[in-house]
Image (tube, rainbow, N blue to C red; front, side, top):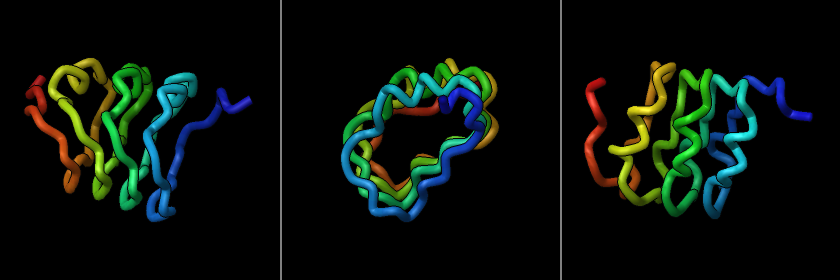
Length: 94
């Protein structure tokens, strides 16, 4: 029922836990904004496979893990915010 959803903005909502991998079911998402919450764990690999994702902001959480492998798959991405987390790796230039 949420297949037509284009944007999720849950910034500053006190969210805790991990980002569910089921977010990848929302294939029309263009914007995901989960900044300034208390999210933990890795960024789900499949979030970078969303074909229309242009903006991903996960800044100011407690996310951890390596992002370098996953980001390169998101060819539609125009804005990426990952600051103030516990992530490692580097963002590919292409």
